[in-house]
Amino acid sequence: MKRLGQAGRLLLAALLLHLSALALLPAAGAEQGETTITIVHVNDVHSRVEQTDENIGYAKLSAFVKRLKAENPNTLLLDAGDTMHGQTIANLERGGSIVRMMNAVGFDAMATGNHDYNYGYERLLELAGEASFPVLAANVYKADGTRLFAPYAVLETGGVRVAVFGLATPETTYKTHPKNVEGLTFADPVAEAGRIVAELEGKADAVIALVHLGLDEASVDTSRKLAEEVPGIDLIVDGHSHTALPEGLEAGGTLIVQAGEYSKYIGVVDLVVGPAGAKAKNARLIPAGETSGIEPDPAVLAVIEEVKAGQEALLSEIVGKTRVDLDGEREHVRTGETNLGNLIADAMLFETGADVALTNGGGIRASIPAGDITKGQVITVLPFGNYIQTKKVTGAQLLAALEHGVSAYPEPLGGFPHVAGLTFKIDPDKPAGERVHDVRVGARPIDPEAVYTLATNDFLAAGGDQYTMLAEPPTTGDFASLEEAVIRYLQAKGEVAPAKEGRIAVEPSGGKTPSSEGTTQQPAGPEQPGQPQPAKEQSAKPRVHIVKKGDTLWAIARKYGTTWQKLAEINKLKNPRLIFPGQRILLP
Image 1 (cartoon, one colour):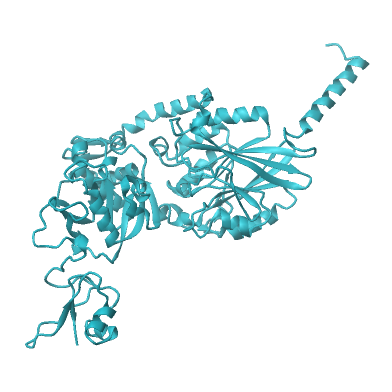
Image 2 (image 1 turned 60 degrees about the horizontal axis):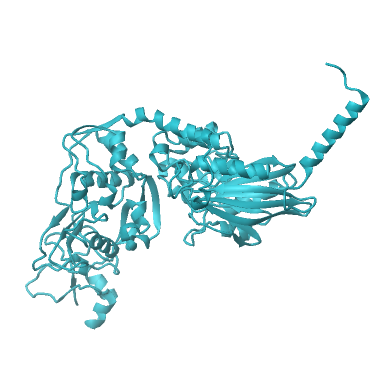
């Protein structure tokens, strides 16, 4: 090759100088000396990776990000957690399939959500090792006092240093199975964020908190609290509460953004960095309907198809055996008890240790013939990826749920309840709302005022199928998906032969008053532990009061001219506030 002459060398130097100047120019719309970083964000995807009418999916997300990068190369893609778990495509490989797809899309960082721990934190560590992007959690500590994940990453783009630090919700300790995070400590997010922001002083031009905290008022630790109590954060990218914030939310001078759930939206926000610091603005959400003109990224589609093809062998894995046909026929599970409904409800108790379980017949989509049971068959029965949640409910709320579930009987209803840990009877001659009677939790009549731990699926827990009474109590625990729980139950049992065993019976109430009216009578014989013992009959028959619905010990005492303390003493009541319809209260 000939050497460049003097004129050539001068021309090349001028060209290089020009290209360098172009690289330092601010992004479109920014003032001189400022650089605009485009932040694309998603959260709570829960493995909805394929495109549907409602879900954008990863292939279209990738194409969208590429389009933005063509306009502004300084674009970052962030995930605020609850990504690795949810649908069969994720659960079969315990999150590995999702990491491969995220690598193909080109994520820049991710925070850990509570459901990302659903396979156990050791598995989440493995997944983080397979990821081509940093998985961040500044406030998650191991028993030896060291952090489980990197607290932050400094990403450089357009000559700007953007520090991204992660925070996980302390609710993870009960919003995944406790065994999944055994030995871990989820430190106070606000205190941890304060330390991280101080540590990043001088190391970054902008600071983003990538958090899975949420905005639920029932939560102690929220992104709003973080914004109000920790200065120095330029943008909070949030998840956990599944909140769609079309224009973001400002609190404490910091912009909070969150993009709903299930890849129904893509979040976009501009982070403008200049000599005076950084400022987040122009937050917007792109709904699935507005991405119709974007062709999915064929490279990401190929990874998704490869994953699905590779999972066919996993679906044929045998997980147990049944000696009887398992009945999941639509006309049966929507009108009455079936042995498959019982098995699913039993698996929910096995998974959670709750007092009672309730799931809807509409979620049971197929039968299983006698013989070996494969993972694929279980997933065909339970195809929706619903996960199990626990709630503390009163007996009255549980009764209301049962009444709603049988309200259409004998007509089929998707909300028809399949239960474990309890039995009840339906009187079809009664009007809807008054049909349920003789409800027993274990062997004991249900107490409308007592509190029970209920295991249900997240669809019903949110009020789905019009179970609005179940949406009221706060969630106390998040567990495996329904199909995972059934698979684990079958693997533990080996062989099953569930039956219709009278958990739900159709029987006129006759002379009995329906328990939904709160007047279930106590059975004769010894009282159950923890219930007051009635006084033994004596030659002179003592005065007694039979407790009715709405009675309180104070009101009874007032009626008979005594004190509640005296009644508690005579009747040996350990908890004077707990008295039950049908109970005999001995009077002075």
